[in-house]
Image (tube, rainbow, N blue to C red; front, side, top):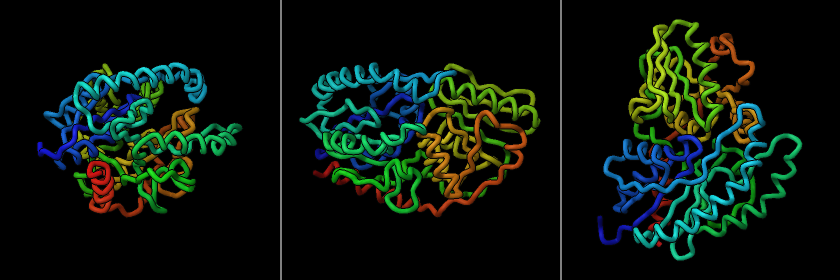
Length: 362
């Protein structure tokens, strides 16, 4: 490592794999710039990062981990979990002090872990939600919270938004069309698939590639629905079931269920699918966009962020929305993939490099 290299701690939230995978291009870029990157998270997060970036140093630094409900609206489950979330935010804030001293940390980059900031070093928060979406009947609270969110973001050296800054963007009103504090920077799309090319033609080997993301138990519930529909087709399909204890399996009716796979292998399968079905998890949307693939998107019931993203992106004609309780074989059969706006991997990477240089050169 060059003498000017910084010790940078990167800590993603553990609510599904998306917060972790979107930090992979950030960590890769920082390493290529000559910095010493340390990943901090749950055991499964560190295993994922180590597979993608062999040799990276990982430390066990777990954060708050929510489990969604199979019967309560998800926004209500989140509200009920807020006291525990605030407790974890405070405790990880104090634990960070010890890690800074132990590893001589110069910069901490936290993906949606707001407790990871320290006045003695540069502290960065990564989030695509500068406006917090609420369910119908409570949306007046969105604008009321904006001044408090802006004030909170000023506690960080930078707030990095994983999205494009212009009219063509994936997050819509969640991070656009609102007054921003001066420390907000758009990084461009953060996708571990950026190196695999945009829209490369592949032989379509699979009828359907389904990507299950997000916390349990809703991830497993949708996996069950999709697998039942795909088995009935008798055609070759694949489901990425997400991290967990479930083992990969290949059923006799052509359905392959995978829990873990390298970025390259996953990208190849996505490009080789006739249709893509997924939750509108924000990281999944970024990864699909970087590959030039649209999808049938099924928001988690009662999850305001996914419901907003599904409505916004289907409204722009880039993705097609479907409701989980109305999903059937006809919905899959009738799906026609829309065209996405042009994506330039080179211009996108330039955005990220510019932001990271501003962070590390100061």
